[in-house]
Amino acid sequence: MPDAKPVTAPTTNAVAKRLIHPVILSGGSGTRLWPMSRAAYPKQLQPLLSERSLLQDSVTRVLAADRFAAPVILANEEHRFIIAEQLRQIGVKPQTIMLEPIARNTAPAAAAAALWLAQREPDALMLIMPSDHAIADHPAFLKAIEIGARTAATGKLVTFGIEADRPETGYGYIRRAGPLAEDGAFAVAAFVEKPDQARAAQYIATGEYTWNSGIFLFPVQTYLAEFKARHPDSYAAVEAAVAGEKGDLDFHRLDAATFATAANESIDYAVMEHTSNAAVVPVAMGWSDVGAWDALWDISPKSGDGMVQIGDVTAIDCRNSYLRTEERLLAAVGVEGLIVVATSDAVLVAPKSRAQDVKKLIDRMKLDQRDELTHLPTVHRPWGTYRSIHNGDRVQVKHIMVKPGGKLSLQMHHHRAEHWIVVSGTAKIVRGTEELMLTENQSTYIPLGTNHRLENPGRIPLHLIEVQSGSYLGEDDIVRFEDTYGRA
Image (cartoon, rainbow, N blue to C red; front, top):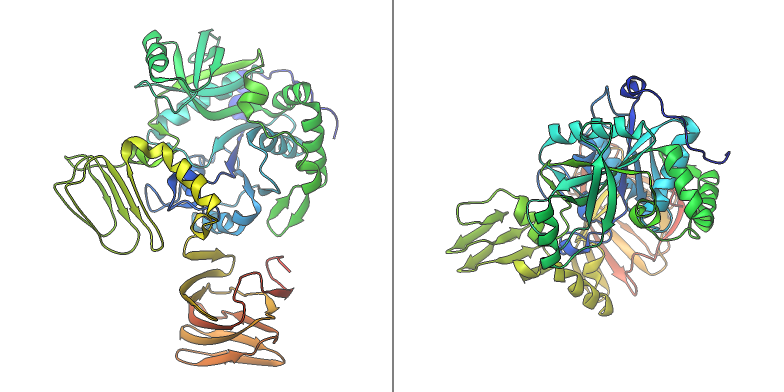
């Protein structure tokens, strides 16, 4: 691909007719929202505020057909099938789901998306959005994007500053300079790191500072030129990774070896803090980065005593607390200012004032090598889900759900045998040289070392109980011979 060069700014009227390409970053792990957010199923994939996940909300935000192109999603390898399924659920076909082989922060991710878009539309505008933000005022968001698009048309790298309503120490700040020609946009005087309480109060008092939202709108060629000028080695690494990408079903997989050599840097640090070409659009749109449980309490509907209660909760004489349970009853008496979150395998209890310290808890559990950091009890796969309901000495029992049309890989195990009992639906089973068709209350046995496959040929989900027995029951005891989802 030829070197990226700044483009001559088209007229405002021309830009108004151009589509904006949403680039949604979905590579984070959301550790401060443990125990719901896990490495294999992080917060952006969770329905924390509504029946939709934060990712689904982010995509829905940019579905206006006359203004936005289909989204480009950047994600890591492990989440790809979950993301594809969540997009299917809301009827969205993305331009691509681009897979990052290793986390390299937002600057290389944005460069990869910009290079990919520039190959298809050299003058594209891209709107870079994290997948885990909440925005309550959608019209205000769209209005800010229109201002940003007109400003980006003049060659500016645009960021969006959230009008601050309190001295917040958990966000970075942007100090604005004078207004630009576009009504509602300002030059950027400085980007400021997260301040202490006293300095944050000073910033608010001046009226010159906004919170740094982490949302950007760039002409792709302008961003690439700035990134290349400051980080030529990282630019070359990302360019090679995009050139070496491989198609994988509906995904584009960046070349791992070259992408790994890019610097691990944010857009702010790599470009925005150093460019003289930055602009900021201040906006009040009910924004939150949903970064911790106290932030989720802030934006959730509350009762008159400041209580947020989600799930099977019974509370007496409680105030200003966030109580959430995913399965069993959560009962509380006389608590105040607490966060209590219960999943089927873990319970978090913390003062609301120390919600940020959940990160320290995660660091401690990493040292203890706790499995609860990685997976929820229900594990999602492209064909459906499974959940361990008993794990003992030489035996494990799972509840398996296979979606209509779902098909597990043709596989075998060296150390375990399996018994399958169909609870509901129809199971098509390959067992060695046999092919079986089982329905409700029927069962079969898969001997150790036997090639086998499970498929749901029906129109309703297939539910079955799997009993594993053997000397080793880990998920890595699997040899795949053939797989519909490219995992063999």
